[in-house]
Image 1: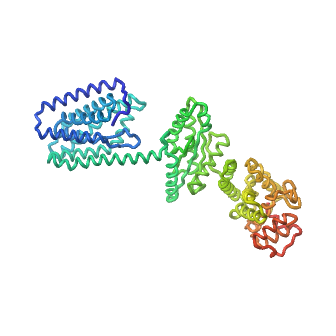
Image 2 (image 1 turned 90 degrees about the horizontal axis):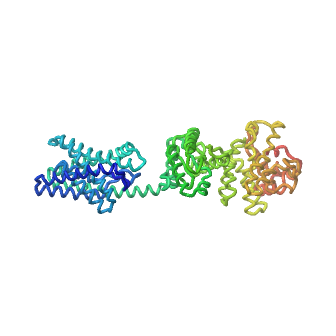
Image 3 (image 1 turned 30 degrees about the vertical axis):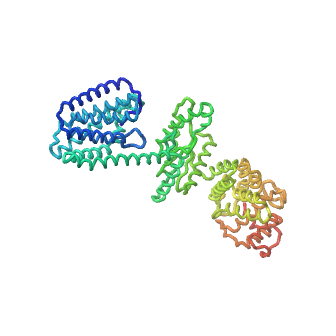
Length: 608
């Protein structure tokens, strides 16, 4: 491993430098005074060359930290210690590292420190191996393992010492992280060192069969690491270290498939920082970036977190139902609220949607969670909201109304209509059927394309006010009492108040008046004739027709021809005759019902 800074406190540098210098001088003296033969000197030189090559291309061991690396030079250093003694082993390791650092123009302080660490580590490993008997196969195994472990641990301890002295990380934390990261690579390299020693003792030439593959593995591992690093960077937000927008979509899709296969829930929490723009505007973007980094640190404790952009984040909670997700998200918001930056109090809002109870597809789950988040922001911020179709979709529709995406607005309206239908007594998608039929009638009446689509949208929301009506009234199996009918007849006004802020002018008016009668006996305002907006007259007819041709809890549906006959019987009193005639033409039943206009028929009044 390498220290990550060039400037080191003298209280750490000076003792290690002194120990390293002493170890190097002792190693040179020991080697110079030992009568090595030409073959042994050539062997030491070869190991030095291989160690230098290995040091030049260290093997990464943790993609999260590009400085966390192990060098195969340890393999050749340990082999030199076992084969030729601690002196040559120390020279091989210290010289290999120094040569590489000089070629790479590393800072002098760093070069001296790392060379000293290698020298001290090698001398310590040599002292340990000298106490062991390597004459037998078992003894050789123990000697190599002990020497390699000592070399790595002394190196790790000295590097951890300088990192703890120059960063905010603790000494024990650095040692623990390093030990976990290096455990498996060290074991593999130790076995490589054992094989190298065994082959060398048989014949130095045989060892070439191992040295070549070792160096090739190191180069391959580096290339693989570069590719993995590039892939990680492509999926990681550089500011916070969380997964980015692309990574989020890929992970969500995989987790959805896994949840579907195992029949397990999956909750998605979308979160953003409240009033984050104020931080950027008042304190600058660097302050905002620091704040986002602090928020990201809190998010990591809540689940797999991602930054989607700006101050928007996501947390995936596999296996968590809505209740569990709410608890986890509330805990995250509490941790964020404990932040005390210079910019002032920090809060966040969150919205949650859960598979499969609320959304089954990736895009749908995101949209529902985003709607819940929007609701949380609109109703006070600093809170978690679960997706509820009867509340959230209206906020979504209001938000979309201000934008140019008409298709998105219609999708939101359709979802809101489904929430209404889920509380009413109709079978199937009543609001969607009324919307489609109203659009067809508008087309028959010669309305332009924009008018037709507005009619469709208003018709899909004509019963929106029923969200505020007690469910026992909506689902009552028999006729309503007079007080109950008065409550139910308030739904146009309620829908009007809910829609008037949408910004699509005629919608709220059409919903308000879609129960006005042609003869003025309707509600809520008693309008008559052409004083009733055309869109409202169309919705009234489409609504009545679908009510009669749908199964209800207290009666079976009517055939199409019979339902149309009921409408024609009430045309001119309850319904606009031209709208009823347009419906007949659209259904292809014009002139075939045998009915004529006349007194209001009781059956047509089922649409309320």
